[in-house]
Length: 399
Image (cartoon, rainbow, N blue to C red; front, side, top):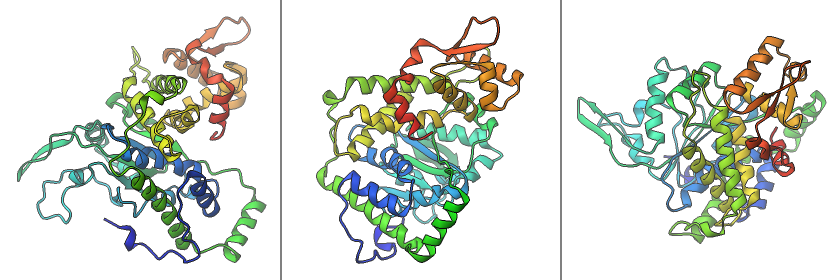
């Protein structure tokens, strides 16, 4: 395991002790512009939650995006954190190998109350045995441990092993979304956008980079130092872990957490007869824990309305992209949209649009509106909370 002492030296002029969220935001944005939004979600879900007592359910949050989005660089900022364990080469067998001579031993026992970080996980989704691999991961991410039989006899761990997992991958293929739905969703995602930088703006940025900016490794070291400072401060304040003040949690924030979990449950359903939906209780617990991790990063041991920002982007990005696109279009049209409008937005054929509308009806997200001139759908009343101005503002921070 890489420790913080193994990392490059921090420049002497940048050794400020980072103790609050705003300081951390400022430093990350200075060296990795427009990336703190994504890093704060990863840190809240994957790392901050490790300090909270009583959490037993693993959380997995993966960054999706093109190579140019610097998603792996953001994960590299976590290298050196006490509770982070990096695995640059991922293999399902590494969790419980059964081999007695592997340096460091099996991965699973070393993950207890830690965050597994995998900067490049694309190989997982190229695995010919992906259904079996996802079946294994489903069990691991349920926190039940894992046991198998080898030439050495029974190996593994029977009891609960709580850990978090943060990773990066380029994209999820449509066939994989369907596979997730049938095997049981356990993964959450956050999509990193490329941005809409003009050619001129990109040129200006690159000129600044080679004339004014620090070397990449130096910038990375500064950000690592800042994140390490930040969480060392939390560790110092709560040496025995954080006892959550549930009584102080904002009731409306809790209600939104449940509603977001229900929304994602339907967004990720499989189009079967009948449709198959995941259990909302697991999603609810994951979303609540992420909000708690986000609140702790803001020096609170209770959640407020602002903390739900941490799950709204995850709710949308953990759904198949085409379903997310239609839902966002419904938001733009105040919850009601017709086929002609969506053909213009999506650039899909009329038949494809009608199929999308029908699928959303099958998933219990919308209902058709009686209109003799054009096919039209509207969000069901139970999802009208998504049209609240403050909720939409939080959603548009990301989309």
